Length: 356
Image (cartoon, rainbow, N blue to C red; front, side, top):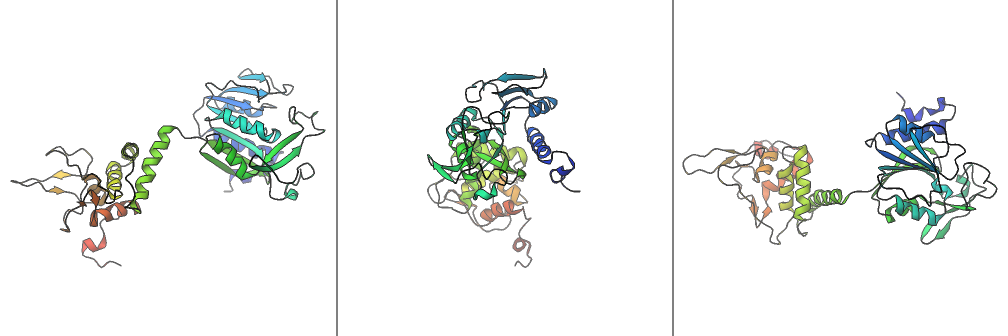
């Protein structure tokens, strides 16, 4: 079946249908809360959000197109002066950005941060002729304060309800400049949705990461990076513990995996050795079962995941110690790689089969 977004030609206004489709799709990614619709215009997006359970504040410098809908708080105000962002969970900026000056765009991006943003905007194409419907109104590429884009002439358009408010020239940033505007405001991720409404117009989801999420990402990614760089400095234990807690919630061997990879990555810079649990107190889910006879402390494990969770090597291979100076060695190191690559159980050479 053809994708919905590729079948909007059956609507009277295909581009408008596509924009609405992207808007609904993005809204459903977030729990319904308080949406701020900047440059709300005809109010269609605000009403649609209300249909989906959002509490909506709609702001525009012109109010002649505001519909009557008591579910929405309609505010006539210049978006450049509006400052009621407290309690806002998501910002919609649809068809507004390309009617602002560069300075206004930079200031608005900082004002919206760190809230997620749904952005629908024109941007500067590499060639003027690529702006099929606007080539006579856009300038050549210009540089302003390190940002690149085209100036768009609003002259003669101010009687239109969709024109800029108070500025004769607007700024259409290139895609890299658009991204930099939000990165400079403290955002972390920009997702460009496909298909775009038209060649020179993108639908973009802009998000920032909380300090807690950034710490989690630091811990998770740095543990995997250490695998290929054993001589690197050890990862931050606090960040690694955040990653371990998250992986542990999504897989039985997650905590052991992060701990093992962290040990693997410490190199020979004096990392800590393996910490054994007191006798008879192996943690639940560690993959370790005690099989102790008289004077025996052998720990039986059967898989890379269990061995990693236990902090052990292959157990029955007789290949020697798992760690040396706090660094995973030999088969224990391979167990980590095996688990990450798909938890192969166990390696062919260990089964007595011919390996490749």
